[in-house]
Image (cartoon, rainbow, N blue to C red; front, side, top):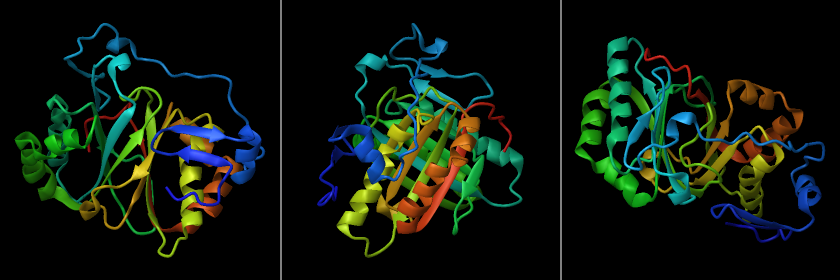
Length: 293
């Protein structure tokens, strides 16, 4: 990370730890967030269906949800995770049955041993000056080898060649390594995925400032239940994008409320997007996802 002049923030974004001299006041001054309040409550919990589950079983949620979990006990799981995110643009006019088949094929990949967690479905909302995607996939792995095993598995290759590529007009993929606080199988009902391309010529100081803001957003906005941030390590599939951010929320309602927060909007506009050449931001609801396209 490039933090040559930000002495108040001794921080490793990938380690998930920070040393804050001056606490909230100094960091809030750094991010121009003096009015932000912290919530005293935490709602992180494990769903009932995970309790008592075999450590070797794969568990799916109710039929309206398209997320699936590897039920490895939380205490045995490392906080380090590899994030795999893919955005798809399905060709207009594609038969719904073919989209259903693609979704079913992707969900079936939860049976692969290296997959910790996988969810896929229709995007709820997208904001981008350059791209229009319709569907998203997010999955997690313990390490890069796990992701490589997933990518090279014959079952995944078959889904890609037979079900995805024939109906996809465009695909963007971003992978990064992060340390996350809390469960590696998310227990919340919505997430926001931000895929960012920093502008050329960004100084080390400017990069460091943006990276710190992205890594610390959860500290200022308690509606963000889990945050993952990192730098892409598979550039061939990323269309020039290099940073990924995943923010989990209790639901789309909390996402909407965050978007109405003036301090958050100011931070995103003046400190983050002003330094970006391009971006794709999508919202996705993990529950109430019908099997239709």
